[in-house]
Image 1 (tube, rainbow, N blue to C red):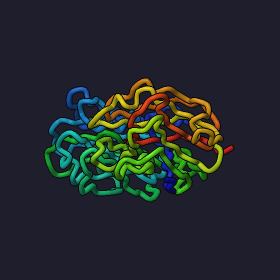
Image 2: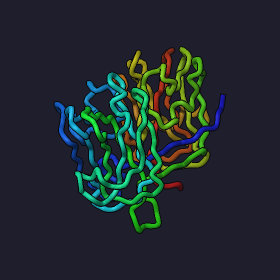
Image 3: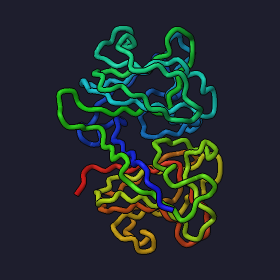
Image 4: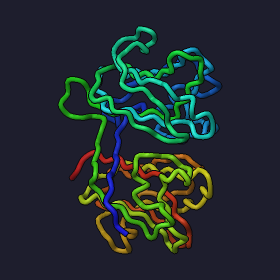
Length: 311
């Protein structure tokens, strides 16, 4: 079945500005619990189990905070936060996103973009900041003693005073997705819903039946140069199913697109983890993920594609 869906292609601030400006950030937080340093929240991995080592985490502080310093003033369009899955999702309730150019109160006195009423365990939620300008982006829990845990923070916007966006390539409502079969309600567009939630029961994963050579395909409708493909694997069961899958990119629909040139062979992806594969500007309209040569279930909890330019 072929369905139309949005392709969320985000060149976000993940330590580097997608290769455009090099290092652009400094990070800080009110304290650090164990090894859960502040840069964990911008490592490009939405893995939301604390023990996977990809979350930032403070101690039990009064007014705990986390801060990203962009070194220049940006117009911030959105901030996306991924909450912890394995414990204590309610801790984020009441947190605020603050954006501005002041370091008064460690940046927590800057104008407020949003109040976070709640984020489901392991979920990613996007908050619109509508072009608010600032060098500093803070996430703070005001007025109580609490742990602050952030498993990923993604920011998109534009450099203030510049006319062209340098952080975001959003080819929204552009593509069509299909897969060899659909298990239950795990439709193919679940893999491009912008949510790396990796527990199947959260309803954000694509999943085929137990097919011979199962595949999933994204049709971009025109040819793009593909820099990278990032895949998030299922966390709650069977991560080894992805072993041996291939990423194929090209313009042919021979064998449902699975005969196109290969970008990468996936040897394995840890349970709930996101792994990025370099495709180095391979050109193609179709992006396929296929498990060749065996009967298997294919589960994809998120597929993200970095696309710099149309041809």
